[in-house]
Length: 267
Ligand SMILES: C[S@@+](CC[C@H](N)C(=O)[O-])C[C@H]1O[C@@H](n2cnc3c(N)ncnc32)[C@H](O)[C@@H]1O
Image 1 (cartoon, rainbow, N blue to C red):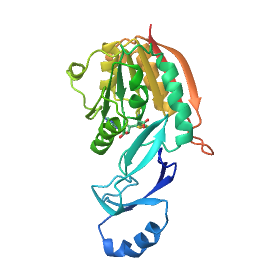
Image 2: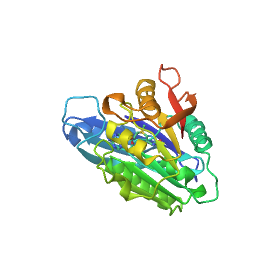
Image 3: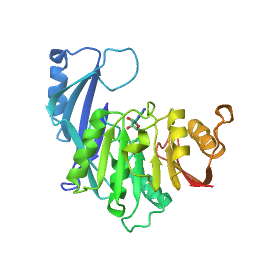
Image 4: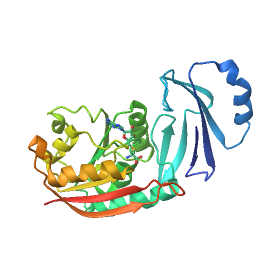
């Protein structure tokens, strides 16, 4: 897997090469590592070992074969360090467009009084790009490395009003809402399966005035929006949101995939 970034200070590209193998055999990779690490842009060569059958690039164990464990990228004037196993938008150019849209849809007052709940926060990018305009950001994410990246990225950018917590949003308990103040804006950016019913039920009970739902899968996006607006009749749950706007963003040019940003307000 190849990842590219760009350092905000030097302006230079940074490249991470991540070999995903089924076992750890450093001798077999030695010559290849020597060749790729001679390329000036390559600052990190990683070996993720994943013994399971499947197409995931996340390893059970990670070895650094050359250079650093992270690469740096820049979004909306902030610097982000990204580990091999942390999610980061694949198209940094369009990510700027996406995050600007998320900010616009968030409708922030900008007076530093609001609380943001950033669900599926990855390395903290969305919350951190909004943090300077709000009182506090609370981010939740399942991948521990992404949470360490998010905390480090907050430090790196001098942002002290963001808290990132590792947790599985498919397994939230009834007490989930006790961990943060009631948010004014919820941003939810799940991966392709969308949100678990438990999380949807939680959001319907929480009744935050505004939800910005970001999705890379129109099918699960439509399902989750339907639940949030119309409820789940089979579970006797009522919806309480109104869909105000949907804006597609071409994050994956030359593919049939599309990202959507959706604004929901309490009805
Ligand atoms: C589409 S990415 C969005 C990341 C981030 N918002 C961004 O813009 O870079 C979805 C994120 O959800 C995380 N995730 C997937 N399943 C999760 C779960 N059950 N609980 C919490 N986070 C999860 C993934 O690790 C990934 O970082």
